[in-house]
Image (tube, rainbow, N blue to C red):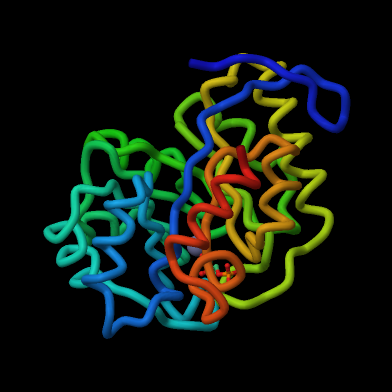
Length: 236
Ligand code: DX5
Ligand code: ZN
């Protein structure tokens, strides 16, 4: 169900269901079973899986076997964030399907439609990702084939960074562009430094899926359940 409200730039925008996607790369890998149980018992909507190739971004994280194992251990849909070069050549390496989101960076390929179409053909939901410095205009040509846009609020590659302030305005401009151009069904996900404070601002700007990492979920100062409850409160 989508209703309309005014955002901080005065435009009428869609009110979408607010969802949380914990970034599993930020978890204690030796306690994953308990995390998954907590996610399931707290109604978590997605599990965010960061895939890095050491080329598109200067870091390595999770891989194909991890995705396969995670998929076999939970019914929570995956939200696979591909930070790899030429993703259209590597999609078959990953286990995903109906209900899963798969995000590819507009900056990572010359054949974006090819990558997005291949994701859709497998029954999954294609998402296009833009880095902080990449303008919204770079993705206009693919908005008719995606279910979501992943707005990087930090430069990709590492957890624990500070939000790039201009990305808040980008979220509200994007939400308005989507709603003014017949794409009000397209979701907006925010990824990077989604703290309780920032999540509230991102939600008011028009984001509806929130990647929860070191600043709002995987934090020694409070339990996972407390983090989830507080995040739900601020994004509501
Ligand atoms: C960074 C990743 C993020 C990261 C978020 O490139 O895409 O998902 O794990 O971590 P925090 O919330 O600490 O910024
Ligand atoms: Zn991510």
